[in-house]
Length: 215
Image (cartoon, rainbow, N blue to C red; front, side, top):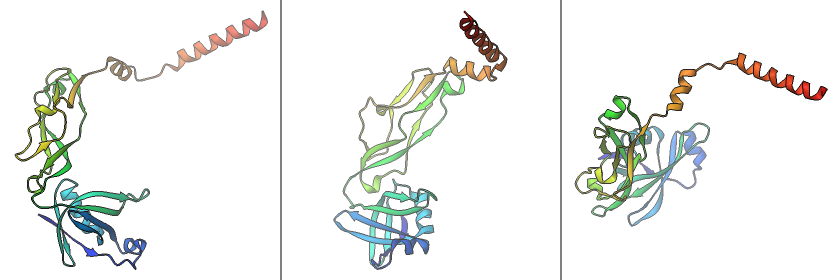
């Protein structure tokens, strides 16, 4: 399991001071635990998050704390995009959770390879119910059966690991092959704008307006 080193946060230290020291203020809650303010180093969190994302259970460890959690949410600075605060949701061992798991599309669509149509991905995550020990980092969805226009993958076609339950209607579309639009092809082929024809048309209109005024 991936471990993230944390410390309990001193309420006397302002968030701005922590961030200036390259630390991130955070909080964990849920799982029967009281909401607790914590802090961690920026680099440590980024390393863990890149590996775990929001769909892998991590262990929060430090200051007599040893808990399993998921990244529930995080805030970013609107200018620098740096993470400024993180929320962790504590996971109870042996109790199922509802969580979003990213889709990993694999294989190639014959329709796309043969330029028959274009692939439209409707869903990028799947809502699942699962025990923490069975939580997958991602769920693979193969595109190999998308051979013609209007071929699609529905939830019923998605194969999930043992212990994972999808929280979607069977008919919901995951991905579909759409027809290539002829208008887009024509626009790409035409490319250049004929400014001469525009000038001629404009001049013709001005001549007409001039003739009307003289009448």
